[in-house]
Length: 186
Image (tube, rainbow, N blue to C red; front, side):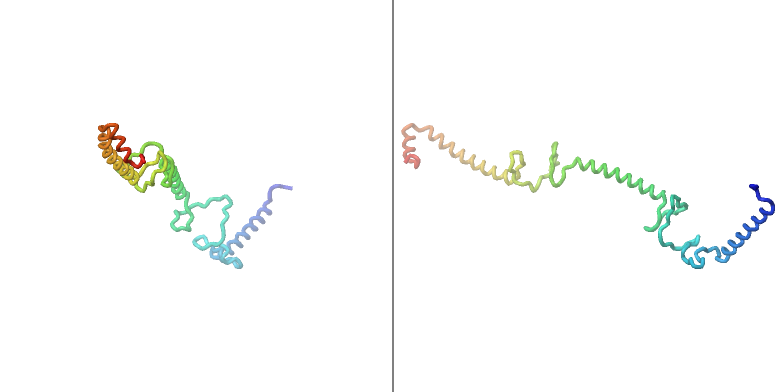
């Protein structure tokens, strides 16, 4: 048996291919190039220009090429657009890390532990509760109360100072006489 066709076999093969080609061309011509109008398969195929699809397309590892940049929310995006967003997201991640680092250096508004000095820049601290611990800051109301007690004590001490001087200038007999007239002596 020969691996090659003889002239007669080759002519028959050529005639068969021509007949199939004519059949396919005739079918294609009758459809006007539109496969979406194959009888019994209306709407199963998209024309090459335009159309609406339903269902998923499985690319089976192949690439969609020639895609224009997305405009509408439901458009597919190009790699160029995706790379731009990824770069922006990378920048955003970097900024988030930077801000997080800076926040770690700040005292939370809900409390925490400070280290270092605070320069108030001539500003006030307001809403300070009364001190209860030895290392707590005191507020103005507490300071004013202590100042009032200290002022009264100073006034009393100054008044008593004059009396003490008068008492030290009297003799032993007078002290006994003064003592005898006090409620403690009775």
